[in-house]
Amino acid sequence: MKQIEILSILPFTGNEISSKGSKKQLSGISTGFPSLDYFTDGFQKSDLIVIASNSAMEKSFFAINIAKIVTEQKKGVLFFSLEMPPSDIIQHMFGPEAKINGSKIWLDAFSNGDYEELLGIAESKSGFPLIIDGSQLLSVARLRELLCKMHENKKISPISLIIIDSFQFIQSAQMQNVEKEREKFSRIFHDLKLLARELSLPVICLAGLNDAFEGGVGKKPNLIDLRESGLLEPTADVVFFLHCDRGLIRENKMVQTKVELVVVKQRNGPVGDFQLNFDPKSGLFSESSE
Image (cartoon, rainbow, N blue to C red):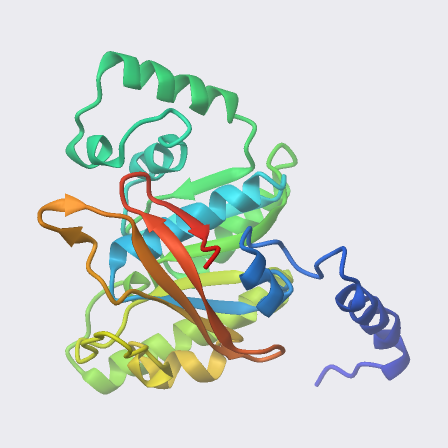
């Protein structure tokens, strides 16, 4: 068992305390959303963070927003996308700057002018410390191997944040035995937590809600509604939901949607909720002033 001298910890702990006590600087990586920064003091090193929603689109777009915000802080992001092809992520990430409507991206209905504008934006962002991996067979072992190779390559910016979209796809094959599959998910999540601690960086995992959760006006999701809740909840340091009472489509037209971000678990901070605006046309989230 590794022994740690108390005095060897104190300077580091003191720095943490002083940074948390300062109103000018966050102790973690800024999320880009003032209220979320207030709750979390930024994404903390070694934290395993679960973002869940019953809408795959909402949580994927939120992850893209987070990745862009963090890379704009000149911090490296490793984005494992098992839900969306890497090319779609780039288009959704830079499409709004190129004034391209999100529906054109979904329908692959770009004009020549759209392509030229998007290409120009992408070229201007070529120095972004963002790496997107679209491999469909992701394991914790492969993730560790890739991070080691990146660490050896001095030309690549150090990684400050890992995003995995989505946790349910981190598996090599489906198991027919439910108990064995639960055991496998438990091991994967435990290994991700160990990886976050070992590398001293935050790891964000996107997850879904149980099929039984119906939502509805005034009904917010809770930890029990988290898919594989018995496996994820004990290990995760932070869990929050993206919850929407209204649908994203009204009368066959895409509308701006109010989304409630609900922090339901935080090992070292408060829980609570606040409102976000989500514009499906651009895929952008912004904090509501209401």
